[in-house]
Length: 545
Image (tube, rainbow, N blue to C red; front, top):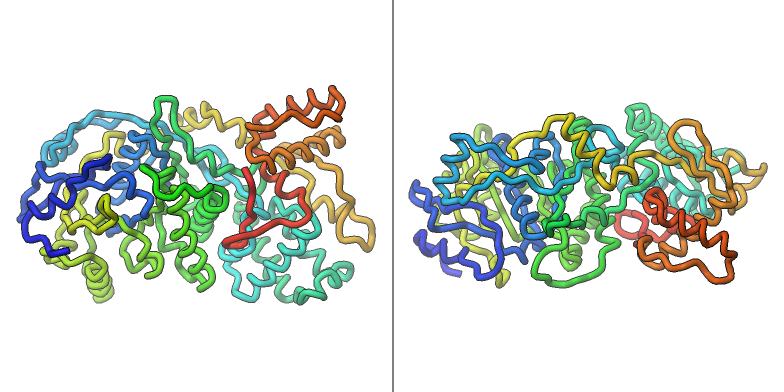
């Protein structure tokens, strides 16, 4: 492609025939040209992207702008809200002089609009529906990164998971994992792993201390049941607009390793479970991965390889991933090569390191008639350098762009209103109350002397606190039915129980299957009841919906 030499040449590169998202208007020779819109073709949103720029340059508003337009075109969106100011996407924006000025500059038809949104919080810390994962599902690789274990310790953790999977010891929460580690280093349990390498007392001690410290910091609530079903992110509202799922993270800002790794679990879970759809006319979901550099910090080669593979392959499942960070150098080259759409906000060049980062950023763009080093340091708030993939999949010309104003509220919704929205959500009842079933901790505590696990067959479901459920036989039947439903694909499509079961049993199962709590637990029960769990990328558990 020849280098564009005029505003007309650049504008022609963004004149798409099909549906597209409007980012803003072209900046050329110091002027904003509203007649030259800069856009992203809707089908290209699953070719991934990067939103980068220094703090305070407008990255968050860019995410909000893109999320709004995706929702309006029926595409669900996931947003990680690190600073707590994206909740405003659910409320109509406020017209003020600044908004009116931007709207006039870029030729935008602006209408104050709120968009359908769900709010989540890791483990229920903060405003949002609690989002949890079981230890079994999270897997040893991601957990090792959260606990900051070295490679040897990570391998030992993988061995522990392998043993638990084989023995049917469900690792639902931290105390389950801690009990399995303690058992395998006891006089009674040491022989269990001798044939496959064993577990050294020193390594087990490190793992146990890391788990104890992690739990002491209040992080235990992130792991357990009901486990979140990531298919909730794929919903549309009754009016056809895509639901914007906002994960509120201000309460865990000081735990970057945790929340960045948890975001990767969400993405890996989607990758495992979604079917291939190939190239579609619109994405099934667009996932914004904020503070992306935290994911890559101190990551092993194997971990980076898994990220690269996930990003490369999840596109064919209809999921677009946008990494949000300060500079492209924060993202490894193999991952950066997969990101076809780029929105680069201003960079600062105050130090030699800043200058080096600026030069590296310029090299990642196609040839341009702009002086990108000068341009990138001179962009104002809400301005960016853009290049995307055209409808043919070729890069568009580099375009300096003044971005449009979001139509939703540019700021957070107040706490009481946010809490009310959470409580009124149809998902709240399903995920709000933590449940503690019988799992590895209880089985090992109740085992006969000399045996690694207690007999199978009973399940014990508990709510929060010390209240235990009764009727173990009924729980066993529920677990069996959950397994059968899980293997069939979707709880909501559960078939009638087998005809040989008594009529009274069928009516009980029907009532249980119809309950919200059953739906949230069925995936976990269906997976964990099996003799050994199948694991895939990052060592996460593969499940069927």
